[in-house]
Length: 360
Image 1 (cartoon, rainbow, N blue to C red):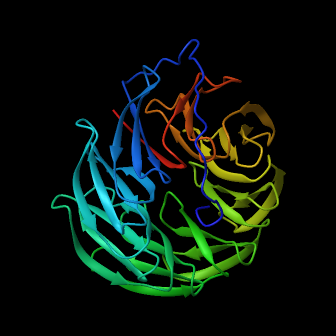
Image 2 (cartoon, rainbow, N blue to C red):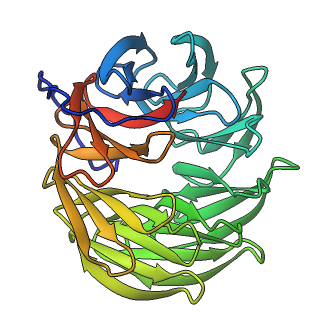
């Protein structure tokens, strides 16, 4: 999505919170603002911004490090990762990485972070305790997303520039396989049992299925135009694909590696997020300024919630009962109680928010 979306303009204003959703834990949302080089901290109980933290230029991905109170922010234009102490709400570390990083992911124990550097064709491996790069691994051309398998054994890297996927073994920090896939792979999703990875290929209107055990391509599956996002159902049996260009969702049976259905979505679906039990799928429709709630059994839209301009990032509150939506176009964050037809609040952030991390 980052390559598709242009700069956004902040529209000042907010919605008053009537009957704010009750959260089981006092939680805070950290929102990366790509256009204003900052992170906005939002109190999800008071439903207001409580801090703005300056970071590097062009922050994109933002994630909570597992088993910690640290937020990692990827600053693409300044080629670094910032570490924010979520409790102190300040930057406590800056880690230089390669050129033009976009995404970060962590080992399951939170001891390492992996950052794909799109302009230097490398993956930086960060020792999170020491806050320094411990290894730099050469991969394919223009790597975009690197994802760690749930078992922690492999890092799956989508190389857009040469249409390949690199598999890095985490015990040796070496590339153990390079597998050709469909043209221009971008997003990566891995099954819960770590057996397969799926990659969007926007250049070919396909999704590539890769066997991680035998390290080989299984299939290139036809999907809609400009697939940009993937979501695996929690039981691992189905994969949903957001087709930004054709305004549809493709459903893939992950056990048989087959396309089973194509569903209508709103205009330009940009991001997907399952409820914890997998019974519902949230769809951020970038072009129609709506969030759909899809029943994954009946395949019917249960609810359509109007939100801000150009919704792009989705996240859950810690209790899984409140949906957070960041709007790249209007520069704000929607707070939506699960099952509600309306927003409980619309909270201003910085310019062009790109990601959301939640900490308690």
